[in-house]
Length: 174
Image (cartoon, rainbow, N blue to C red; front, top):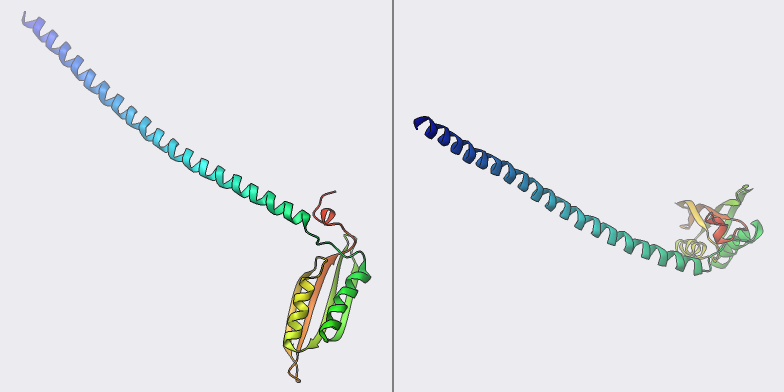
């Protein structure tokens, strides 16, 4: 009977020990799964927020694009129209044109004109503002200012635009 008790005791001990060991392993696995679930929930919240933000940005982009398509900004029909518009601003502001040179129109339709002019500071600033407000799209790529001996500002700028393009073609669409 002594051996039976020892065997039963060992079997009971192994059963309880195995149960406790198995329970501990299962608890670790359960905790890993809970941690993984929490991480996935956190990621889901981040992805939803990112997705909602992206959707809002897409809507804003579409609204902005629609308003740009409605705008009346265009491009000059030819080189003469552009140069005339540039020179007209100088005349309206009473500025002295020192020089105005262009290299012609590139095959892509881009034209650059270097303008050197002189006048009172505020008139020079108004001329720059008027060039930016022209009905045709104009890019001012460079500008330099110097004070001359009379107290006037001498300005050098390069203005660029595209000739004879519709806004759609200029943006790469047909």
